[in-house]
Image (cartoon, rainbow, N blue to C red; front, side, top):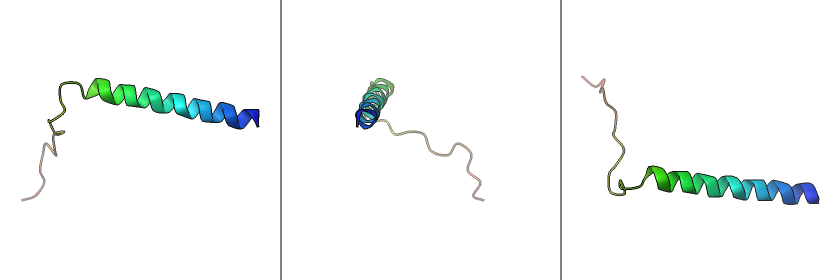
Amino acid sequence: MEDTHEFVEKIHERQAKAEKNEKRQNKGHDNRQLPGKQHSTNK
C-alpha cells in the first residue's frame, strides 16, 4: 500500500506544479485570448 500512497503524493505534487505554472504564465493576461491561426489557408 505504501507504493500507492507515494504514487498519489507524486500526482498531487505534479498537479500543484501545473497550477503554479498556469497561474504564472497567465499573469496579467486574464482577459486576453490566445492568438488563433496566424496563416489562414482558406481561399
